[in-house]
Length: 382
Figure (spheres, rainbow, N blue to C red):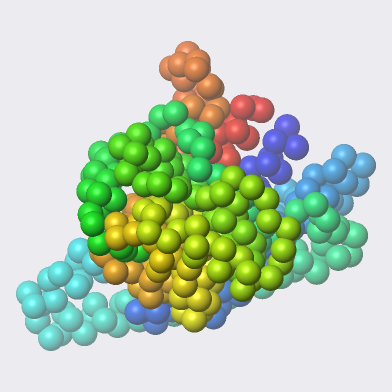
């Protein structure tokens, strides 16, 4: 059972980092009197601990001190989740009780509300500072315990994406269907455009609608060329251009000369209608992004480029149509996704005790598909 617990710690840390870096949470810190640098430091500390969890999982069997370290860390991570829940709850309270009804309050009541919120924000900053100090102690202890980062896993590294649809079910169906239909309509428009879709990168959302759109028969019949390039954090213009060019021509290119690659891609696209997906884009440099798209200008009218990103700044820079936002899953959809990965084709109602616990775990996912998938896989081992 100890090993299962560590899988849950890894998943919980991933969920925490996703929540901390979500646009909604960052915006909350920017607009309220909350310490944003402290929040980013918290994320960095969590990632530092996450990097050694694999090593800790192996060593806990023969080292009781490591097992104790993991057990204490588990409680700290749960406390961190509770703290973020508390901040989320206060944000909702402010939205519905304060901001929307400010005009209904007298100055005296308004001042009391303002004072109460200031006290809350200061209290949250103090709690985050305490949590950070607690986690930094785990960082120091990891060094003393000889825990090392797994050489095979980089903290910021994610599995490259592909265009293949791997999730047969569509979760958050109604919300996704509306975006899917809207994007299909935009696909058929004559003008050349770049569709920026922030938050599409979340695992589990990628089939809704980006992959489904890419593989749609009507969409396929509308373009001469289609290509999918996973950009990720390791932005490399040569690699991306080669990927697109090799997809278009169906042959390898061994050169690393970006000029030659761009010239060849430009000629291959000339007068032809294409659909490119640049998936999981993180680079915010406007010049780099525009330079990457230079060969695209030779394509026929009606060519399309879809960019998926979690970074609102990138989407704002690249957009020439309204940004298509994907909202978090509902609790019910989170549970369906988690149970699908936990029980497979078996009905979860066959395990009523596990189903009740699983639904409570699904609440912790906060609508993040990656969290639901990861926790579902971990749940199998129980």
